[in-house]
Length: 208
Image 1 (cartoon, rainbow, N blue to C red):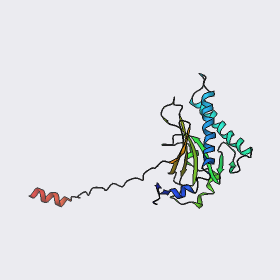
Image 2: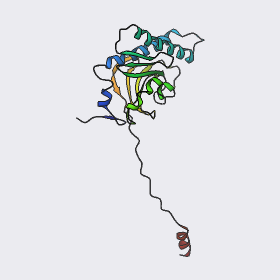
Image 3: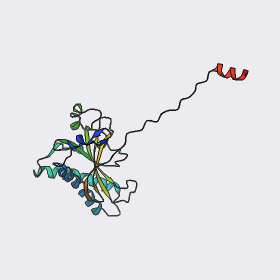
Image 4: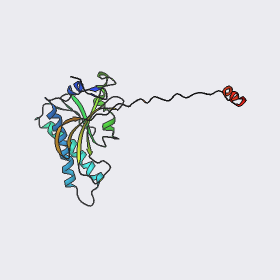
């Protein structure tokens, strides 16, 4: 059976991170993040609320939710490696962060740059493998500020901050099977041959 490839990252390697045995645990964390996002949207509806107040409140609630679930000791696969605002947690040993961002064109440091608690893992990876991971809470239409439809993307980036894979867990707040988003590699376009003319060629043409 031929293996599918996602930007050079094979499904077999993706399965070593998320597979049938632990997929529900990765989805569980995504569910916590999405739940806090949607609850914040419902709670902060006053005229003095805007995307900033909702965004900062959702972030605080999401961070605290992960810490509360960890302290409950109900999830043995969940670990905390940094409990600051730059929260780093691990799921079955995979260290992750989270951020609300546009997953197509992300700008948040939590998505693009590994935290110190993640950096120690970088020597174990190659350039064609992801070495830092992040949950991206994103609007389905990120350009529409009034949009209230959200998705949670679990992404793996390599040390050059390029996406190796993106997995969509939710759509319109409905749980979906894990699905990899294929990003085709850039296609090399053959450059046309350009004939270089010399001054001698021009002089010969004039003399003709």
